[in-house]
Length: 69
Image (cartoon, rainbow, N blue to C red; front, side):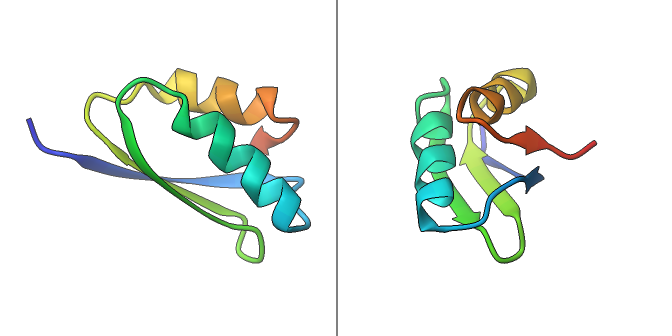
């Protein structure tokens, strides 16, 4: 199975610490192989195999942020 890239918009990030919190949380999601977070654009890019969208969203919320609809 091939890797899939998904992009999310994360609300509430304002600094490097915010980016790190989101990165660390999402890296723990099963199937995630790479995470890129840019607080300036509020973008979260997730690369992986069979990554559960709901689990990514939950990890972002657990870190204290919100994925835009």
